[in-house]
Length: 289
Length: 107
Image (cartoon, rainbow over all chains, first blue to last red; front, side, top):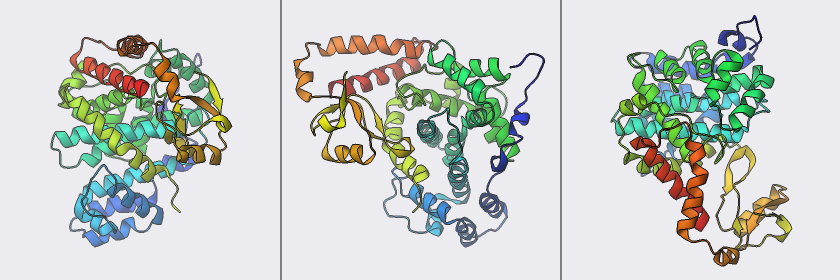
């Protein structure tokens, strides 16, 4: 950080163009889902306004992550099988990845970035499903977005981020510490402000903002804990942005205690990530032809 | 492990590194046996060389599984340097990570 200046996340969001807002198609889907009495056909119609989104949502619904016994052919079927809130969060995940495609973030290996994000999303969803929560897709979306603040750093402060990445590669310093030294805040806080700007629910923004430092009693601690543990596990499984290189983030024991897993659950969690990660990467990343 | 020109790589050799295609998706994993489809993909993507070895090289190695585990264990400890290896969850994650690396190495 330059002496005498105080950088704020909000400042970095000025000049990010279209990334400053979510696609109108997704906003329309959210509005439809939140309208009392909205029908499956109306929600399907809202999703269908974006043909690329339709393809990606159907790829997701037919992926190994869901393991459905029959093929989902239409958005209406997907809504009926998965649920309306779940469809909304799934569409959000697809929309965000689309939004960032083509963003010139030269410093980051974008393939590795999204593979880590997707692995963390799958792990977050699995942890949520193990707790028996009604909408594990919400945790999928939070997991997918947990590091999105780093993309804003790459776009707006590439040289400072390059310095951070150099420090992190040595393994001596964690990413968050290097970022706080360089910018005054870390990628988690940057992502939190981005999600607030997008007017996503506070649950999602706080979970992203606190995924390295649980704030117990914040009301969103379980979501933060879930993505915190999922992130750590995915780094351990070499689904980190640096693959087999780079140090794992530090486990916050209170986060582990909150997330509801036992150590023996980790093998199953790893298998679930392994099983679904290629399918979901293909669903979200491969071009729609 | 030495880098080998794709022109010299034959099906049946073992990849010594993860190889990514467009979008960063890994289509050939470290430790995986290289097949014809991998060779086609490597050429189609214009990749000129990767780390690879002949399968028989592995059988010539004198290292025992225990020695491999010890080597991998030592290599893994620095990745966990910010974590308490005595915490039950970290301990289990370390064990899983070690086994995955061992499987990839011995495959």
